[in-house]
Length: 498
Image 1: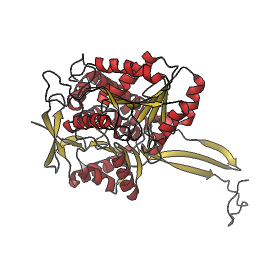
Image 2: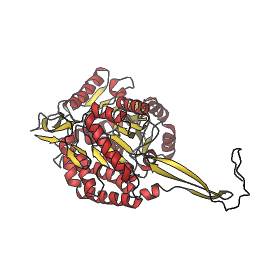
Image 3: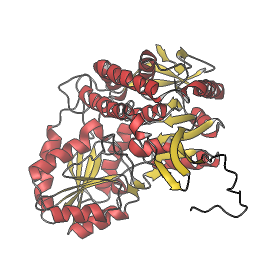
Image 4: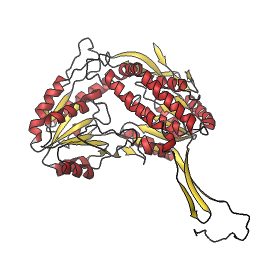
């Protein structure tokens, strides 16, 4: 059986690792590989390689960095099909969905290709008599990313291209559930001309995570995952004096107003709830039907959920694949059951789905629950699977209040044809990313991604301008070049501008 190794200092290596974890094929339920789990010695080796590489890369020209990014962008496009199949085999999502995440990750590389503009400072001539002031930003050093299983290439690409283009070196700890594509990207970086040690991949579990959080030579941590772990990462890494951006969980609502085009809204809600088997931090998991919209919307949603073709992600005719593990499958099923026990109406039940020829796979069908209330477990907790609940609200104000009372604030959306309603909504919700007739409002790479409340710990959002800010620190220079005229005496009082 294949063993997936680390990538440290430009080479594949087993290092000091002796422990492994299984990598499953979610469509069959069978183990397809083993991945090494790093020990502290492996963490030290990866950070040491990155620190050594920073000595040269941190002083490299912006032109050299952008040339690497342009080359990487072309390699990502060239190998898109191959990487999509690697992702589909380990994650379970359908190939076209995997291609979509590659494209969205590649957009951040395209932003990094313009890092020269993103890093431009300001200059003020003659800000005081004979004095000029300018500022510029410099890289931090060794930085690390800890990323989730649900987007094994996109989320890391939201981090390391910006960090590396800014002059940092990077240690990536991807999810051990679908690790192979990270090693593939490491080889693409090498082909793109990136020096050894600038990008390293460290596979592992809590040992690797804690090793990075505590290592004195790691200057910053980027994390995406569940809220409890995001809190842990933020607290432990900041205690070690590091910068941290830690993106947590979500409970994303989509409000459907009575004036909305219900067919349009239902199409987009279905895709947003059940795409990638609901395993997206921006998936819509709660539809808030306002007023008379509810009775009309639910049957349309039910028909569309029943029509979704579920099967192995490698089959291009399928629209939804399995979830990542057997435990994830059972968790989704348990939420359908608890919702029913607590009074919700099960409109579509995906618990008994069987895919012919893949009876041992981690499949659970799309499920739809109506008349869910805010005190039910299925509403309060992040399900992270193909389960959409419908909550009913009397009016827009009640819908906004429901969203704002939720501890998460990652993404939200509204379906309406009324501009005044949309404006009230976007100004009133306490959520970081908002869509108007767009159910998954993930910003393009020139903007930054991040939520509010329990969906983000640390001040900076990810990629875009805030990503550049996170991976650099500012210097401000105030300069004077006096003539050989000694008549201007130095003063002991505080300097003032004149």
